Amino acid sequence: MLQQTVSPVIKLYSQKPLNSENTSIQPLAKYFNNYFPLDNAECDELMLRFTERKVKRRHFILQQGDVCRHFSFVVSGCLKMYAIDKNGKEHNIQFAAENDWSTDLSSFYAEKPSQLCIEAVEPTILLQIKHDDLLHLYTGYHKFDHNFRVIIEQKYIELQNRVLQAISSSAEERYESFLKQYPNLANRLPNTQIASYLGITPEFLSTIRKSLAYKG
Amino acid sequence: MLQQTVSPVIKLYSQKPLNSENTSIQPLAKYFNNYFPLDNAECDELMLRFTERKVKRRHFILQQGDVCRHFSFVVSGCLKMYAIDKNGKEHNIQFAAENDWSTDLSSFYAEKPSQLCIEAVEPTILLQIKHDDLLHLYTGYHKFDHNFRVIIEQKYIELQNRVLQAISSSAEERYESFLKQYPNLANRLPNTQIASYLGITPEFLSTIRKSLAYKG
DNA sequence: ATCAGCCAATAAGGTATCTTAAGAAATACC
DNA sequence: GGTATTTCTTAAGATACCTTATTGGCTGAT
Image (cartoon, rainbow over all chains, first blue to last red; front, top):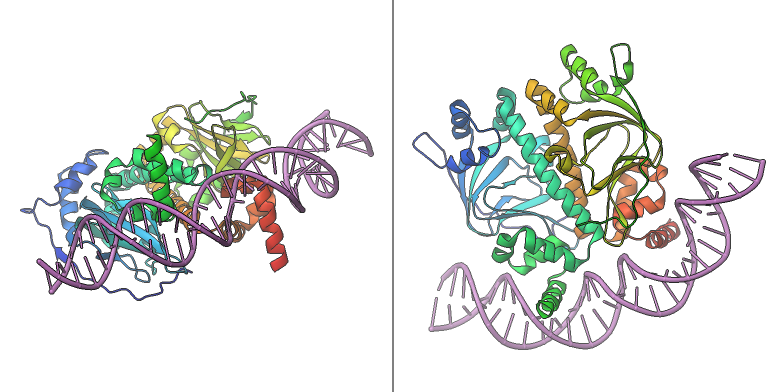
């Protein structure tokens, strides 16, 4: 359905296994403390199954046409997930900054080629797990099924609010709402990326910003 | 945030407990066969914890300001979930027909007043579970955490596709896509409801339909 | 330090979608 | 089966948002 007009350059990224002397898994273990905290055996599984990756700005985690092999947790930096339409324009579906997740769920579970791209908008450190390893966690530990259910329910609620905004609010309202909800992202991202996320052109975002500057 | 201009009339609905002679739970047990099928003990829990409800057209499952007390499975009929904006206009966030779920997740889990309404657009038969009973299923049975995780992941993917459409496609494209994806719903629902779901006015949907009719 | 490639802002003209209003057709409910 | 209500269509004028083009500032790579 979606097609890319230009074949993009594939950029490689560094990879590093985790071990017990390596504390890189800490941010993820800490993150899970917000849900049902993990015991030692479960933390060991994290260390065994997750891999740290450093990704440079503009490098790709996933390219259209490839199978999405990883479920990625962002330790630092920021990713964007987007689709490319028939005119070659990018549409940002999601940003993922610190303590957030990014994957094309559909491609990841079905192991089918993805329609989407995931790209680093900042130098980014990830913790990644592969399909079979994640299934192993789900099957072997009730807690992982539980925690990931709760996590995705929260993300479902966020997405539903975004749908509501999209069908009921003007571009200006959506922009103000974005600023309130993600003040941190709003500072870090170029306006072109925010415009793409809101579903408007950068030019129109610029006029909205001018209008808000007068009002405020 | 969202306010209702007119205080709506509360309509009651019938309720009936399930027991082993009552086969009403069948559609739900059958539905779970699409995931990890339930064993006898788990089916018994369904029967114990879910309650059948019949709801007439235009009657409410949830009203703005109330806590959403139920997680509802649609056996037959159809529900709509919507928000009411500051001008009193309704915006359809979701339809739920046979073998689909409807609840305001945010209100349901946090047990806080909801901003949303859920209303039957057809005479509808539901199987409903309350907050504490669902938590009991989650805690006592790995399989329920697992199945509900998989279910909500699927619904997350659907919602994400809808977000992508909203930020990247014209109203005409979104309407055609809706017809393809939900041909069954498109036949059953009035165009006013579909327009509200697509985020356009019924008048504009009418001109889109005329334009598509010419094109053949 | 320089240069190419982003990025933001502005403006003019065009298109998509909304608002309001009204009549006709379909449908729910008694 | 008849009536009240909802729903669909049409149309004219208004507005939100887009397209194209230009300019200048900034940034990142060499």
